[in-house]
Length: 222
Image 1: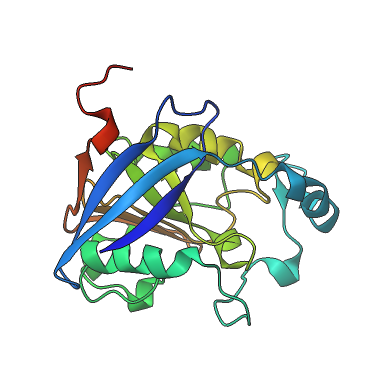
Image 2 (image 1 turned 30 degrees about the horizontal axis):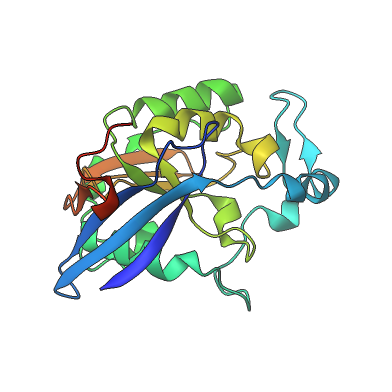
């Protein structure tokens, strides 16, 4: 059994930590996953603002050209990747990375057109979020910034996903949907992938996450 924490972004702290049990068919056991309070990345805001620029049409800050597609081949690898990849492999067995070319269970004819460049940034985000309406529980969220060593994959409660996306450029860095975006919902089995060449897909794999009551919370009321 492996214990790992979901880094949880929210505007309001949770009243008490929640716990989830992730059924892990690969390891033949379960992963007990803690949900923690909000993480404020504001200390990186000034550095990110200096490195980026603002798009005149959308007003969203976007990264310099040389940073738009960070690579997993960088020397440093964020500590959250190992856990995030195990979640992905449990939901879509055989998947080895948050990259459509290394993910299984996505039929070619399931992809749909999704315009990332010809629309207002808010319209793109709203369209993306409409695909996420039925997601539940903690999510693994990956976008272009996740491949920076100081960021990694994000762990976000589904109920807070809209706020996370809309405030991403000020709370973290860069416009959230600048390039590829991937979301995995281990509680429902849904996986959503947006590719920057203008396509989106939503598939359903294994639901592997079961809400659990922490031992100290049994019989308690919020």
